[in-house]
Length: 180
Image 1 (tube, rainbow, N blue to C red):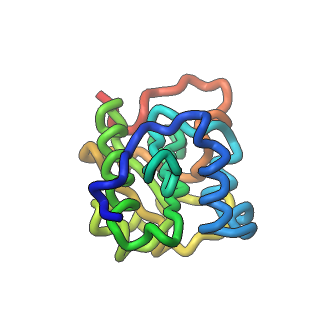
Image 2 (cartoon, one colour; image 1 turned 90 degrees about the vertical axis):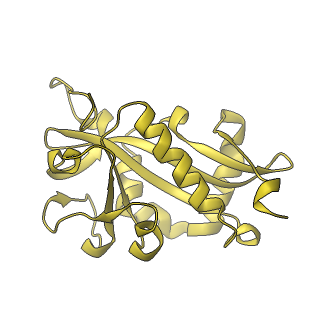
């Protein structure tokens, strides 16, 4: 199997069961206690900005994006990104992140945030969020709070507690951070 054998497609509801299996396999039951999971509990992910990798019609990896708010800013939360063990270290996860970031750019998003390892995500354009700029609903190592700024200045618009956009209440909702 090579990366050339993998097909990358937008996520479809038919993929949901396999995606859940991959996430359970990758993160175990502890995933429900994580800060990013708590944010994702607040509302649905953006299926049109979420992608799968298929090997002969079998989902082998997945990435999702969800709309978030922090203060007056808007952005996207990347995750979970999960790859089945037999398919790791072949570039599938990185390709999915590239596809998701391009889709985010295409809709005018200014910033994508995640909780992850800087050595992996740094190579994909993510940098540490300045300490104290964002707060998560559960404890997070501040060195693992990363953002890819798709439009200059968009990260600065995100300030304070990060939550799913669906929980932002009835106040007026500006477009995604940095959107034109």
